[in-house]
Length: 103
Image (cartoon, rainbow, N blue to C red; front, side, top):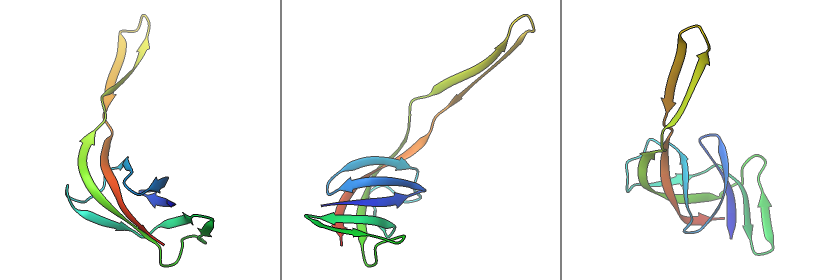
């Protein structure tokens, strides 16, 4: 059984007990959430496609950790102009585990 859910504007294909990284969610570590934006549910040969979401379907997730990715460094340079700009970026994410899929 799998489902396609929408979290923070991104779509993910998820299965039970799968661990994935999503953009930072405003939920404390160890808490449980219910995702109502279920776009598709497949159970065996039965497929339910939502328009835009599947009625009555939900996915329970457990928040594991909040963290940030390794730093990416970028920059600009113009020769013979004494011009250099350098910056870095670290994207925040939340790691979640799919606890259950209710169709």
